[in-house]
Length: 225
Ligand code: UTP
Image (tube, rainbow, N blue to C red; front, top):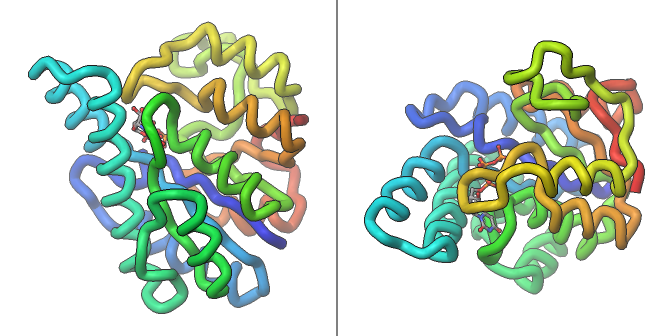
């Protein structure tokens, strides 16, 4: 299957401890060997948020904060490319044209952000649209989408599935500034809806969830476009 994997920035911690990055590389190589065509988008994580906070304190505009977040997400992409070795295209695409060119080589393409105004989740949705992916897998830092923030509200309940209209209502109530997007951003939801991209949110702390999801196991939360 042609798959886009969004790997949460939390896989690239502030300390840049590499254990989970290596595990992801092993998992992605296995999936490629099984015949899956993969494009991967890496989030910016704690280091992006640190840079964004510093830039904002120094008077940078929101779009400059976004730009620095994009750069950090591309650094994370470079780390994963190194871990993947010759299974990956060596360059990080900076627009969708480059993505398509690199993807046509048959290697795994790994990229970070594209332009200001949204998160890497929107990039993953744009990539899924561009390559005609059969699945957008969002490997994040929770095990699915909840009725409320599970870290703040103990009564929050995990959803097996959610429609894009409902998801859009939820995310529009959250913060929309640089470095502060929560689970998914409104641009991503809009793209999933307009191109009817099958999407699944899974726990990204266990890379084996990629294989489980591709085997059709019922994990995470399915987004119904
Ligand atoms: P992300 O928000 O996507 O990374 O990018 P994250 O915070 O690690 O989130 P998860 O856990 O992967 O979901 C960091 C910041 O970079 C900017 C935004 O400011 C975003 O909050 N960004 C990223 C853009 O402006 N455009 C992009 O295309 C990507």
